Each structure stands twice: as C-alpha cells, then as structure tokens.
Length: 588
Image (tube, rainbow, N blue to C red; front, top):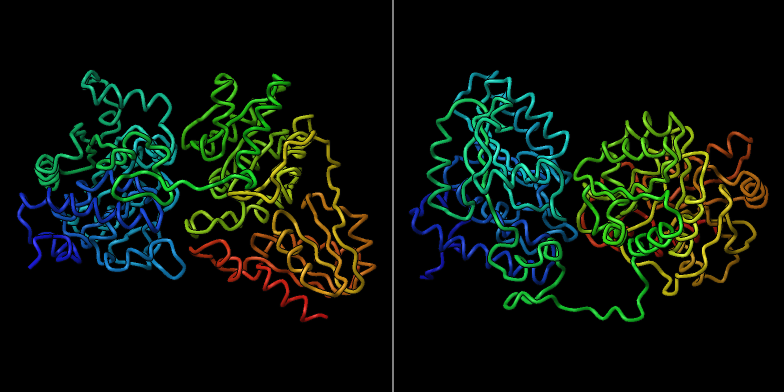
C-alpha cells in the first residue's frame, strides 16, 4: 500500500480521517500535485500554492459542504477543487469541456458561489449567513476567504459595513500576501503591513471599528496554529475576521521570488520551476505592449496625458509608463468605479486620461461610465483590454459584452482596431483631444503585424474602410475578427465584398448606405454578443433608411461561453474561419 496520503483522499470526509500530524505531509503532496499539473496544463499557480495549508485546515475543521465556504476571485481554489471530488479530472482544468479554473456552482456542491471577479465573497457569505439565521440554523458555519488586494475594493467594504451590524455566524479570512496579480497598493495595504509586524495598536483596528471580532495575524502556513484557531472560531459568535499571513507561490522558489510572473506562468519545468522559454523572435507584439509603449511615447510629448488602471499595470502594460512617470500613471487597486470617476475628475481639469481596464472589469463600473463620464460628455479615453473571447479563463473573463453595453450610451464613441497599427493611430487620435468619451477595444495577446512602430496618423472619427470589393455579398467586420474574414475570403474564388468598421459608433453612414445599395446580402461579424452589438446597429440603420437587404449577424449567441482555447470557442460561437466560410457558401 502506498505511503502517500493524497491518492486516498477524494473528498473532505476522507481528509477528516487523518490525524493532525499527518496534515503537513498531505500539504507537501498537494503542493506537488498542483505544481505538476499546472506545469504542463497551465493556469493560476502562485495563489493556489499560497493557500495549501489553509485549504486543508478549512476542510478539516469545518463540515463542508454543509458549512459554506466562498473563495474570493477563485484564483486560489485549485487545492479546494482537488480535495472536493475533482482530483482525477483536475488535469482538464480550463480546457474545453473540462472543469472551470474558478469555483462554479453547477460543477460541485462544494463550490457555493461562482466567482471570477474580485471582492464578492463577503457580500455573498453574508447573504448565506442571513438565510441560515432566518431558518433558525445557528450552527451552520459561513466562511469567506478574501485577499488583501480584494478586501480594499469598495464592494468588500460595503459587505463589511453591513455585516458589522448583523448578528450572523460568519467568518472572513483575510489572506494577506501583499499581492493580487500585481503588488497591492493603497492606504489599507500600508495599514495591514503595520498590523502584521505588530505595531498597529488594537485601539486603531479598522476591523474592530466595523464591529468584527479581529483575530491574528497568524502564520497561514502553520497548520497546528491554523487548526487550533479555526476550532476556536467555530464557537465564537457574531461576525469575525481572521488575519493570516501567507506567501504567494509558497513551496516553489521561483514562484516565491517572482510572484507577478508566476501568478499564471504558462508552462514550466515542475522539477526546477524554470519557465519553458518560448522563441518569440519574429512574432507580432501583444496588443497590450503596443498600448503600453504608445501611451508612454505620447505622454513624453504631452504632459496632459495620464494613465489609470484598476490593479492591472502589468497585464495592461501601463507598467512602462508607471516606471518612467510614476506621478502620471496610477494603479488605484481593485477599484473600477473609482478608476472611472477619477478619470472623469481629471478630464474636467483639462488632463487627457487614458483609463486602461479589462472588458469584464469595466462592467463593474457601468454606472460611472454613464453618470460620471457620458452624461457629462467628458473626453475620457477607455482602453478596453481583453475584449472578445479570451479563452481558458472562461465566462467570467470573456470580454464579449462591451460593444452591447456601451452601444446604448449617448455621447460614447466606440472603436475596434483591426490590428496594432490601427490601435496606435486610435490612441494618437484620442490624445489630440476629442469632444466625447471614446472606448477603444482590443483583444488579449498578439496581433498580426510585427512592424507596428510606424508614424502615428490621425483617424477620421466614424470612417470605415473597404478591404475587398464584391458583387452580391458583403461582409462587414469590426475589430481583429477582420483577420478571420480575410483568411476565409482568401480561400474562395468568388468575389465577396469586405468592409472593416473601425468605428462601431458612430457608423460610417455614407459608406453604409452605399454598401446597402450595392449588395443584396450582408453578413456582419463581431467578437462579441449579437444582441445589441455591431450587427444590431447595422440592422437598425438599414431599417431606419428602409433598406430590405438580407442581413445575417455572426457573433456570440444569447448564452454564456465557457472555457477552452480561443480557436475552439470561436468555432462554437460561429466566428471561426470555417464558420464564416460556411455562412458565405450558404448564400453563394
């Protein structure tokens, strides 16, 4: 019989059969298991390695799934998944038809709440705790695990503020590792730093001021202390917070030393921890880097330009500007609402704010986009990163809604460049000064052009371009999905028209009227949802001017798209080269 423990553990009920002194050995096995799988399958590494001991302790002490556990964001939930019935299929993590990279209610009863965006756990667990109280259940435990970056978000404070005036049985565990994806920022981070070195007086405890019982800080990798503390907290009434100190990437030297890189490192050597290098020679630059280098170039020439990002300086490549111009580039932490209204305030004073933010994270600041920016017609420049289908992160991260949710807002200009050069031109155009706010959407990853460092040109707002002339059929595309159209048309003998609409709003009315007069069949395609999107705008325009063309819209249907590679998900969504060809051939 194997001396290993992990092979014999499928669920927490198995885990609880172990003696406490066996748990450190299990922690080592679990850490090795995560490293070995993520080394080849990729995914989020550092956060999960940092909560190995905490995950074991939680499932050992609490009676999950009857006791309810919510993991904030969910980057750190791999050990949780492995110990809750998904060990044998963990290798399918983030792959098409495999398990999700984040907790997901439909996947397991142990995943009590679907997460992927930050700072939701306290509100969610409070809702669950109130439900238990209303049912008269005073023994059920309710636990939220939230990081020091996530707890600084406004929504987390809203949850804490409400919870502090309830008498609910809830425990918030603050997993303090001083980093989210990038290092944590802000006054709360400085406060927590003081607390963990023992110089913050109890009378100045911000948590206790919110009517929580505060415990800690304790070492989050010390299993005996964790077990003892959690056992005590089970019988402590009312809202309580346990502050634990952990190391992101714990147990893998490189992941501890380079926590930003090893958040989601790609493939690496499991035995050494060294990244498996990729030869990127001759490959096109990432859109993010084109943005980062271009805004820095523009900012050097124009001292009115400022950059803002909510906790994504490395991912968005605003880091280049932050390194050179720290007084003009701001990481505001996980605070999307604040980022947008901060940009609006700057715009009122004549600054030119570039607010770079992931598409799905801008959703969290929708009212601010409408009320604080568009209603006042302030020329904020939204650089919407990770637009379209992003791949393995799945439904919580696909940027497929931004065209639709921005399209209905008055005063908003919406642009989607086909390539890196057009992105560069758009950034330059916006920097010259606009009369309205603008949203520039671009995808994650590499573009299609290597030599993008061309002289920047001013674009005409609302101007579309003809890519190919045809006779009966025309394809209207927006954004980088235009390359799928070009690839499809290159394999056809027929003469098919192709028009690229860099500007989704305002549309090029003159050219669009010409297209509708010239072509009988129109096919629109976008890397986003069909309802309310680019294709909908084309249909509305045709109806407004009483055109009777046959218009087919290609894009994401009225459903959530889950995880897989971008190519796989484009095929499912009907916007792959193959699906474009099939649609064209239907009308030929």
